[in-house]
Length: 186
Ligand SMILES: Cc1cc2nc3c(=O)[nH]c(=O)nc-3n(C[C@H](O)[C@H](O)[C@H](O)COP(=O)(O)O)c2cc1C
Image 1 (cartoon, rainbow, N blue to C red):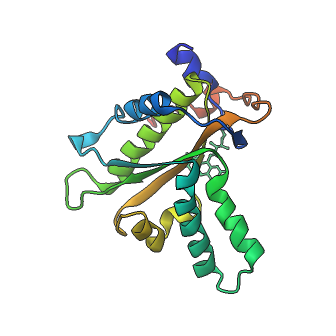
Image 2: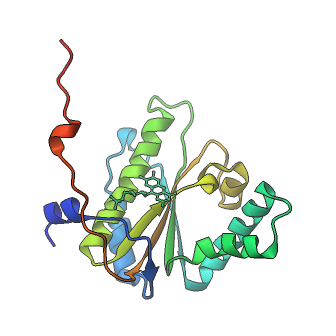
């Protein structure tokens, strides 16, 4: 698939199944990620790649987070929280490790990691791999950041789920470029 086609036709794929990306495909996704633009060359991106059984560590974190948010959560609710880690064969957690006190503000560092995630999504699509970017309450929870090996100043940018699309891929939404164009105010 050529680059422009990949960029124009990417869609999120929420239902993903085995197999996940193989070793070489993972390498290609990460190589695409680290070519994202990066003001100040701070390289703020960090990636935790979890495959198959490794996802149980993330399931533990998701269960603990659910329990912390709702101390009376029953087993069913906790299993449901655990299940979020297992929604796809592979999960890449993308984190912006923020350099504080730098002339490049934190928001630009987070955006650089967002661009890295988008590079991975487009690269995955070009390789025939389904991808879904998720965040939610987990992404902003200081305890989760700590469990992932980061501190509160850092930002979890994505839980990027990757795998083989299960079922039909949704059709592209109708969008009009003109709807998003504005003139410079006089
Ligand atoms: C920063 C960010 C966070 C997102 N978080 C979630 C999420 O928590 N749950 C979810 O279902 N989708 C999430 N998405 C994906 C969007 O829902 C998805 O891109 C949107 O539905 C449009 O679909 P498309 O990607 O197929 O165009 C997120 C996307 C971005 C950019």
